[in-house]
Length: 262
Image 1 (cartoon, rainbow, N blue to C red):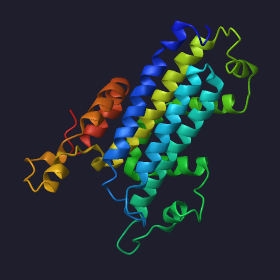
Image 2 (image 1 turned 45 degrees about the vertical axis):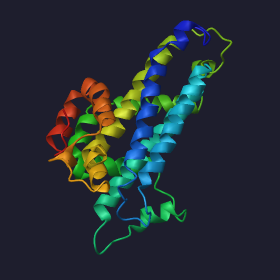
Image 3 (image 1 turned 90 degrees about the vertical axis):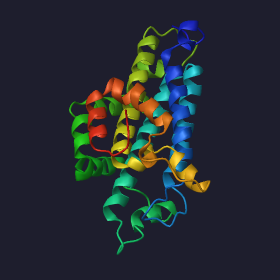
């Protein structure tokens, strides 16, 4: 398969990426109203993190369209890191914020450029040991799926195998190019599932539609239980990604939220 072939350009990966890009764009916009407690930020720090992640997905799409699968994996590793960072910062703020600790210095210093976050290994370990999300962790890490994805990202980033190098050269007919595209579809989807599973489980307010706030801003009485309504774009990604590919995780999320996920 060659990058200029119709089979390549019409691959599922591009449709999937368009869906994910649109989702993160909508999510970033919808959560800005929720202030990040424990920081001096006047808005939600995840808004700009999610916009950055959207940008990384857009970059992945561009380089894949150009036929550079090897570069796409290097960007996917960055997206993976970004997912872990947003999960870690939310869990860390949740655990350390209190009336007596109104500003969580480690995260606030990171926002102000005074302190680096811990390395990936430490953040990942913190997430996996967090008691508040242990049900999600147990399901996500029931096998070595994410260990293999991380290794694949590193193999491509560091040129650990020569055949990965060839996947960046668009003039070479690579027999494994189709397989590599199929593989990156699954890898991107699994990282999205990891990120959203933790997010939807830990941050129930991120699921909320704008109806309740819109009514208040217009001086109207919100409809009964509208504070529990789920945004349509959230329900769509929940149905098409989490419920479809990880119904076990979807079940746990629905059982542990007052939000009206269908």
